[in-house]
Image (cartoon, rainbow, N blue to C red):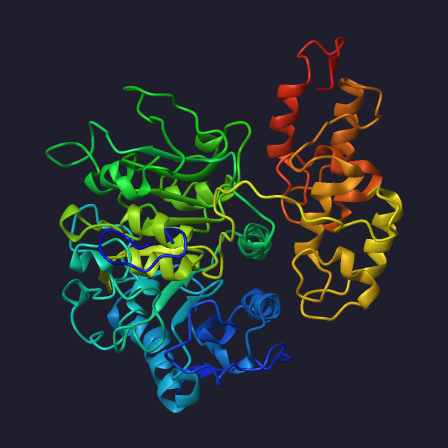
Length: 534
């Protein structure tokens, strides 16, 4: 079948730079012709990092290892470590010019690159906006999407992204998925990966990898939305394109759920959230604004407001902004503006974001397709390789995956074998370990551990009892055991240590405050009482 607009659909039928000298973990896939090259290939992206930050250099080497990005696609920049650059000359000399020169000097790289990652500890915006209040600036990541007009005054650089399907009245490209050959000439996808700390930046990729695991699904989650706010500066007080997405008949089957952040109507909470789209709050954000139970997969947060990404490194300065708090609350990615984007320029289209991700395309290309302009103030903060292979589909766990000794029970004996079989991403495991290779990629890594966790002890996928001592009830003793299992967000095989898998309610391979929130639903508030396990 096809979209109503004829869109093929799987679900509807020079100086200043140095390349890092890390070990190449994957060969360049230069043999893939431009007509077949898509944004999910490791060498379809150029990754930028900051030579003046030891943490940025470490991040680049780590990031390359995570996705198999070749060394030729890592570019170190002699740039400031601050988030803001003062003017156009600064961003030209420190970021745009060196990237442009590197691509020109390496045509074999340029021929493969579809997108650019603005990496950890690089500046995120530049110059002073022409509006009041003059905070933030123009997005560096957005500027990388079109490097042909960067000598113009910043406010005159904003152009139309002709790959945006809304240019022709559609929500996905009429020719199907973009390839290197079909992207508009001189245009690149872009994403920013930055955060308050190096570990926080790595966590964005680790969250993306959990979501991209072949056995992962958003089943049971919702796409929360709030398109009305009395403070939104439009005649209707509505984000028209969010409402259009919710009401689009081609997206009507999605798990839309309405909430409200200003107390006018609908519910204020967003439990089991995969996405969160809303308006209009500007300042005073806190990660607590996103607290709900259960938290859900938390793929992407996007609020149409100004100044949402003035900083991605601070939760309080200036005046607290949207993006860093959304990420601190557990979202794998967030979209925000580095300044005042103005209504007339348009924001990325929610319907295109949802439709492209439903197709199984990467977050990087979904954002690029949704963004109506280049060289402006919007940016995606998150890993562009994130995909959602099973969308909201209910999936079955393959059999006999996990049972390596063939005794029809998936228990501690299989767990011991799993630890022995762990080869790591991209390293072939012994053939005897095949029952533990959940994604059938011939290695045994954390992606497979996510699948193994779902079937451990023979329990059905998604069942977490919280009953650590297995006495048939959830009580304060189990809660105390949970405290010993907490180490904060971030996937780790240690989730199985000391029976801690009992507490990983959201199957993200850690035990953190989100799991505590889920447990508090199962335990009676009276510490002397107990609640039978369901």
